[in-house]
Length: 470
Image (cartoon, rainbow, N blue to C red; front, side, top):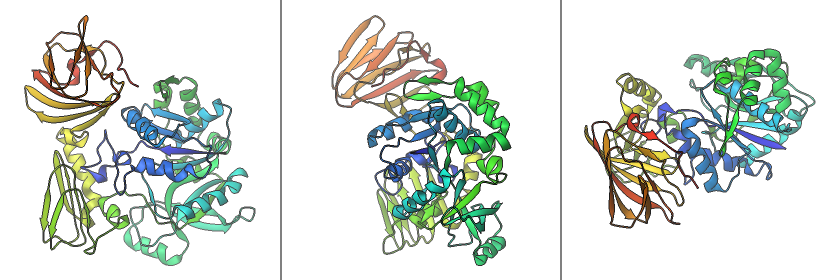
């Protein structure tokens, strides 16, 4: 039995302005109609039709994960919420401990949620070949056959063959990201491979080696699971126990120390899609070697990536550039500089700019909130509530709200009264009034919300009951 363990907690700052802290790249569709997370789930579906993925993410992303799995018709083994980021070794340990607590000891296929693999058939073949090796207690990592002297990846040095495991090798050395000259030497030697960050091992084998080489992580993750709790569709790790856990990668905590490390070679068109340049490299290009997404008009533009999400973007005379437009930001960079986009995010954070963290379009348990206009004393939002969903019962002391229904029928609670508000009708909620809006219908409910007052933030929201969700 294989259980895919999908790590979905990254922030993807090098793909700003599309990827942001509260809506990172793994939840976006970048080259087809599925998100990176959904493509990862689909990629492993065929390996074991009965297997259910276990996804690890943080609290802020939980509803996006649940909704994206639901839209694929996939039932998760668990959606595990990490209260704080503690790197890959504790995250995988929590997954293995949770499965052990359920009486399971499957082979774990550990995958980041945001990678690209062009040749899925080869990926399947290599994983299936590695299962026999994993069943013998080896901890397998995948070495990517390098096609360039890449300085953005760590490397694995191939060691001697493992005779009891077909096509497997010992890992002679784990290497951090090299400089360009060293990377060229690695490529020329034929002994070094990119470190993919993907793993395959039996859950009990990983826990055994973790207990031996990183006992603090083993114990803290076990306690985080033992004291954790189920909350709706999610499993929440205990915050105190998990926060006390050392923060280490699986490479540092286990793989570099164990004598059970093995590597399989993978040549399947892999990329970690860590920058706009990487996305240009893996994408399908037109006759001018451009990738154009959205409403884009170009003249004499070559070798470029242009993505428009909310308006027309026109470009003339560009070569080798990236242009990404969102409703509240535009990023322009030569392709060879896109690894430095993360520096822009650091600058935005230093200035306290919201654009580092959130889009105008924000996902909620009940649906989507899109900020249309924002000013010091008023804000206009567009709310889209899923069928059967509703916001929490709440009130505000320092703002009023005016709801106009533009599609569907709303059920509105206003203090002790319930109102039915149809299309083209509206309702006013004064400050201090307890209120809720719900969608009792089978189609999405579209509402324009106008907020006025001197505090439009979350600090003036007093929630009296949890939101209603289908």
